[in-house]
Length: 340
Ligand code: NAD
Ligand code: ZN
Ligand code: ZN
Image (cartoon, rainbow, N blue to C red):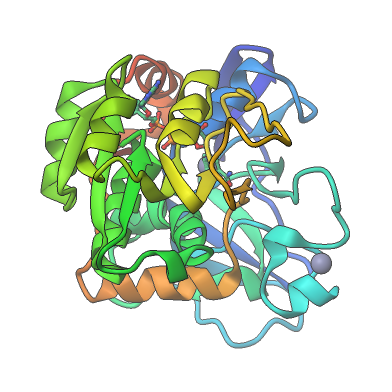
């Protein structure tokens, strides 16, 4: 089969590889769509995994074959794949929070395209417990739900109590994850949503997804957000970028006893002074990873009800490298999905 593999730093290519065989407890999935995440760009630029590495951690497709003793799945059934493959046995995994698996207390919990062969290929092998039926959802359009919706859903769920009707949520970066975050906030809360991006067209799109206000990133952004919140700041800041600049913006606009969720992995850092100045009192700063298996079911329920929908650009697998370049150049609208 064809698979898009990282072969060296900054270098990826479509190669011929063996179709994987599902073992006990595993299912072979014929990939219909594989979303392209900004994390794939981080993986392209910085080696954290051994080469060659098949990328792709937003998989959806159809069940193609069952490993020995696997039951409960029908060949041809459309499925999406939960992408954080913990040990399946520890306390956290037992609760469905494989994204916090105790087997990986510090490093990244692996998943497809994140340590295991990924979805930018014709076939993918996945643990049977990590598949979820898609029902009537189209697998290509649904693929981004596996990460671009799961991760913001999880981040939002962790601070849901703060998201009251009088509260404000700031979404920084309205790309693949951010455009889903705005829709999820709209669907599960009545809070005011303020979207921030460097790109004007993203801000216009954000209004369509349900943002109440938009603010261009830049030196005036903090004052603009504070102006929208009577100077009090936002109860929740969701940062889908993660540079020094966006972290500083979050710190400047979060309210006292507010919550900053740093989802973006651009490598920025934020001073955390134990002092009466700097961050407001009572602030929580979190660094969530992916979501839980239960979160994926909630995301699919939102999608099935038509409350959230990824804006999808379809591209052939052979275009993987050029799609990554377009993502880097902020040229992708919504989420790019590779169709093998
Ligand atoms: P994307 O490229 O689709 O979107 C990024 C958006 O941020 C774009 O709209 C861009 O215009 C905007 N942006 C860039 N710089 C900005 C700035 N200074 N201020 C405001 N907006 C700015 O990326 P994506 O796929 O949505 O991923 C976003 C980040 O989340 C990446 O760093 C990715 O690695 C990370 N991520 C983390 C997790 C996790 O579990 N923690 C999961 C998935 C992705
Ligand atoms: Zn991702
Ligand atoms: Zn575990």
